[in-house]
Length: 135
Image (cartoon, rainbow, N blue to C red; front, top):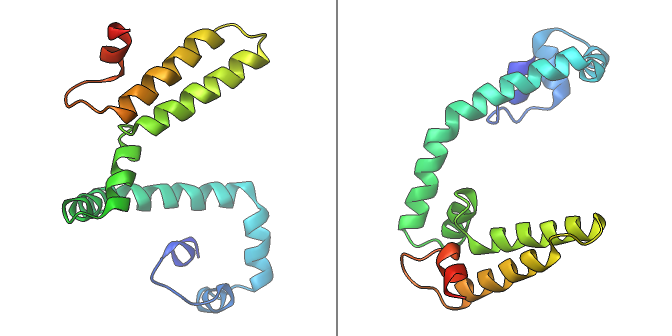
């Protein structure tokens, strides 16, 4: 049943899948509430998705090479090369520092300003640390 549930090409309803396996829909419902079954389904899902990673990365890279802007943005986000991700992390760090009484806020504010400079004035082969050293 887990294999049928995880097969993305099988568009049948859960009831139809239950009929094929020979169980009542209520049995599946009970299984879905059982942590052991849910853990098993999740482990199978992890195996399936991990085995597809190579093809997915190849497909994403092909879309990037074709000039698909959304794919390029996704690629940079996935590889954590997109400056906005670092800005969001810095904002999170500031909020965390505020919650802890304010320690470290000045440093994080400076980091956000530095990242903004990097985004607004991109220079090939330079990273955030280069800009921090210039200031």
